[in-house]
Amino acid sequence: MNANLPSGRPRPSGRRSDELRPVTLELGAAPFAEGSCIISTGATRVLCTATVEDGVPPWREGRGGWVTGEYAMIPRATPERTRRERTGARGRTQEIQRLIGRSLRAATDLAGLGERTVTIDCDVLSADGGTRTASITGACLALWEALDGLVQAGDLESSPLEQLVAATSVGIVGGDPCLDLDYAEDSTADVDLNVVSLEDGRMVEVQGTAEGAPFRREGLAEMLDLAEVGISELLRLQRTAMRRAG
Image 1 (tube, rainbow, N blue to C red):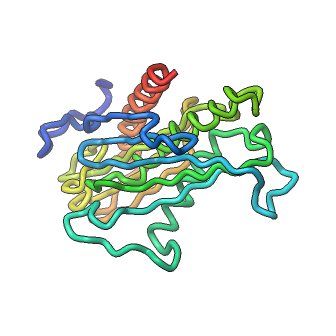
Image 2: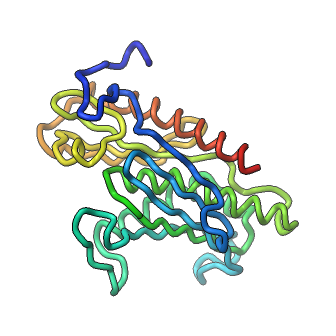
């Protein structure tokens, strides 16, 4: 643990303030998809599948490839049934889809992809907080597997995935900065922050809101330090999963 980070009081889960929930990454989980990964972070589980198609949207023609994301929660991902969105993504869903796409594109050489579109579908099987950040972390591996398949097939000389990308949540709960909030913590947090970072340490996105008491700049710095700890561990786990699949 970084000596500069607060240890805080014990959390309901028994975790330290800088400790992720148990994480598993299962590559090749969907045999018909060009790439796939089931990510589990505690009780949150997301199936991420990659589909590669020739061609790009009309506005993208002549400018290289495109990577985009879609996100959905299956009806019983939560304690009560959630209705399916039958008329297109709206509100929160659309926001998360755009975040997934931005995160993956930040890690990808789109020109090197050629005129292909890769769509990553992130379907939440079980939701216990952190579904958007888990989706990004799992989607990166699904994308890696799909692009590696193009290389193995001789369709690309090298993978256009330039580096890995991962995401986690942080927040202030009961006055203490905490990493990787589950639903019980997220629903009572004074501050909720989602952080997406590349392997080289550059941040793709920081989404933060004072749900309760406003926070000071030094509180933001503490949360970003915690996020860095968590994302470093997630990147390590991604690399381990890739070696096992390789």
